[in-house]
Length: 262
Image (tube, rainbow, N blue to C red; front, side, top):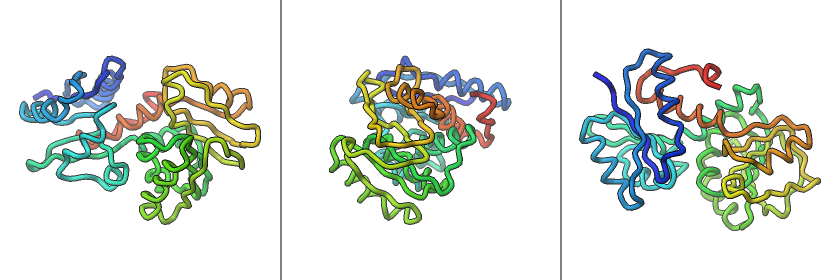
């Protein structure tokens, strides 16, 4: 019987999840159908419950419903609990399970590029949900220090306070976007600047050796600046594929190779 999956969001038109999951299925021999579901802002819970009531197997959750999905779950993985957001749902023994595969997607994408996270110093720009979701997996992958820089310093400080106990092996620090300086192995842009078309100005005093833009398919002043400095840089497409592979593997028990889809 064909397994039914979906991605739920608002907006949803831009989602590339169906093409990715159908490509994984073709490669691994899994019989599935994966659809996009646009749901009203106040309709996530009823849409998700209805999907599972009709024998749906799994749901991916995109903006703006990841926090709502988190609140609905009976069981959470460690990384979902720390992220306080869920992008992957499934039913098991009558209970709704939730995971957050975004951070693992980022780690897999960086590793696929041959970027070594062990003992690294990482600067993350932005202190929203995207940053919260990746700190634990980056720490698990060996980051020695993660500095969170945000326009509103208090938000970055709150994130450090919330997450420090979960990553005792990694030093977490907060700074303002205006105060950026120092040297880092990786700078990750988790701000919405590329999505809104805003310019992100990186000071000359900031030295970095690799640049990762979480957004994909959009012009990015962040990537432009990395390229001007001749630093290896990439957009977030690999992270998108990586998080999808992780979800596919949870649901279907088989893991496609990331390199086959980049």
